[in-house]
Length: 170
Image: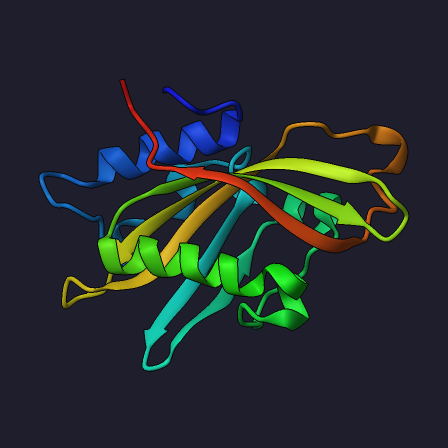
């Protein structure tokens, strides 16, 4: 897959494509945690989407995201309390996924207050509700520069979206 560096982001993208079954977007009910497998699940997040106003809530989040990125956003919405100054840019990216019903692959940098950084790759994939409208976004995160020495003490402070692309499956 062109543009991907991470194993888990690629794996979820392939799974999402398999679930399309001739549709533009798979349904939320198509996602089977058992089919995702134990290696991918810790890297997964699931968000619900509402439109008036546009709001994204984190419903599920894998243990890898909690433990290695210091992020525990379950039950929270995208806003300054979760993503600081980058909240609007991140919300806009999720809105493009939801409204356009298209995947977005992002490469991001997360800085900690201690000066360490994580470079991450994130795939954001729309999931339709029963009406065909995007009601959920599922994603996976890979850390591209995990340093074991500070893996347990990383506390995120600042997000920078480095680029976003529509992934290519060629």
